Image (cartoon, rainbow, N blue to C red; front, side, top):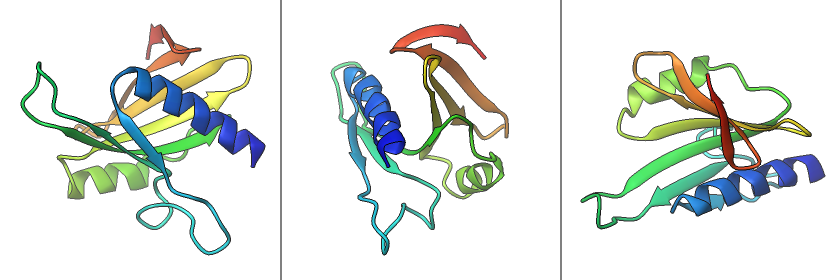
Length: 120
């Protein structure tokens, strides 16, 4: 549980610094994740001066390895207007973030302590 909370904290800090509002689902024995276990968090980016619309993203947070992209690609096909993000925290290496896009290829960037390390 501590490793999961640490990974969620890093994701929350990273996206809140970018202007997103992040809400994680509370984990318990009876309630796990959003949409049948696919997502840990929902993020909303409010309307800003530079954009005329708000954004919504669903996020799955993992430690040490990314989950299989297949169910997330299928979800993205069903709901193309919702951003689908996979985040992975590895101790001493940092945070990696991938966005699932409609072209079925995960697109992402590797981030170490909130800074972009290199493009994937």
